[in-house]
Length: 441
Image (cartoon, rainbow, N blue to C red; front, side, top):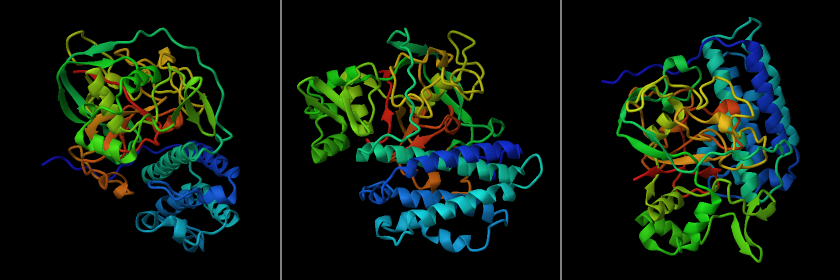
């Protein structure tokens, strides 16, 4: 039988560090709702979406339930206020029909919980392993929900959030084409020594891979446009049966936020239409669209194990899979703006050749940041998997219908993504900041 480890903990973390990242996460959450009207705070009822007002309360509930309550530090009366924001509500109710409190009441709940975190963590230098993990988990969920709120702004055509930056990055000189990676055995997944991880990364296990070639760069808008202009959306032979069913049902003729007018193809970013940037990665395509492009190009999506190898290993030998495994492609344990397009610093996706200092050991670029990347793999249990405190976070999606996404996007917080992180999504969702890179067949 595989070893099943208990729910995760991390080494005791400095309370000052926990409070710093918590405050930073809260600041961004508040900025994501501060400029929304009452109507926008509820938003249109859409599949897979949540009213931003409910998300604000739910984030507070996460800290309230998973940190304060578990530590016996929940202030009197908070449980009553937070009842509507329990995640079971999201699973079992139409949130648009709930009698949600107004923004002032919800923000008051958010602030009361935030003010209680410092008291709950105690006055020692470091928090306990359990409290460290619980707090770090809440920050991770807040960061992920924050990216979801950014996504909803994009889908609804709302203005960009106030914190989205306008930094400019130079294009690089990376050549298109593939990098070769030899076959061998890789430890796929995370180990207890890796620090904070999510439950679906547990635990690292032997993964045998044949030699493969993976593209240095993500597929660009220009490359995807060639598929469109060659009748890619009209040819059933390029699509899986399920993919063609989606294409026929939705009557999709191009990526969801593209339109053609007299000056060529344009793409919408939040509430603004701009001329299509051909060297940027294709973004907002679902798994079916990525798979169809691969069939047209004679390529395939990588398995998630191949993706992780290309991102995390530093090769020691030319013809043997080996070398140390790192948390980030650039082989350092720190992140800065020269390595990857993260945190909303650049206002959207960037040229696929930019950020050469973030190349992986094998020479693949932008494995972290810019766009989430689809893989062939469906989310499934690793040997030794055991759910953490939010039991249904991963397990309820291990149904063979949710492909794994890797690498994060331009809107992902830098602290919220690493090489072994496994995101996942339904095959037909194109609202995510998702694109793809490919492997040779």
